[in-house]
Length: 331
Image (cartoon, one colour):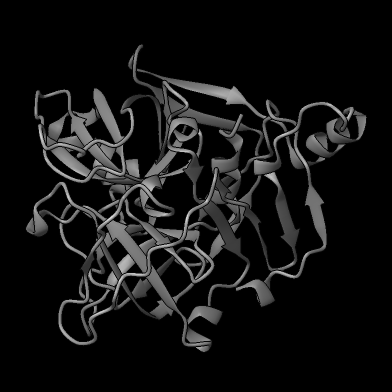
């Protein structure tokens, strides 16, 4: 993927500076972009929709030029942009050796993660969700992409049949066992204060728009000491053309629900809204990070691709618009 993203421009951003955003408007299949400077999200405490203004890229660049770069800056918000896409670098405090799970070729290739306190597994979160109708103990997977920003699938936190937006979401990074199991919660857990769910998913629950992001009350990423990077490309077809694979880490229900499993397999189809892959998953892994070989999150796992032949799993890509919206919450 690095060869697709030749560095042209690197912006070093001040720690408390919001970054540019956009809102995407879609036709049935072809993407059209309509950039705006607002984001509308759901406030968990007031139970109301809130719209906020955020800076454009041009405003950010002007502010950057005015800033005293000798002041405290966040090297974790370095962003590289070129004609093919961009990326936000991951943050790893005191990095340790990476775990390389064995991949079983043929059949179920999911492998248990034996140490959830190393990168990138400690950034993967178990989500426990409560809805307005009182439904509890629904769960899914999320991933930290900043100290207080978690990505997941839209259907994990928004379900019309249970009353709409969740009333509570508990976030457990690196969970490794059920309640009461020693060492099962290696980090502090936190809850969510704001939810953004793709408006197109809210409107029609389409799998192709099934993604969400959450702002947590606490900067849980600082306690964990890491979060994953994110990346987008202007053209995702190279995943298929180059025969590339993607990895998924999450909490499958059929493997004990509270335990992380890893899988990796090749991409079968990709375009700018979504990609489909042979990588194995199961219920509970919705919202898992889908990441490429350099461990940048490029999609959010939805589940199976409806009516696909052969059967494939599907992830909602981080395209340019989604990338911008995510970065806008990194303040």
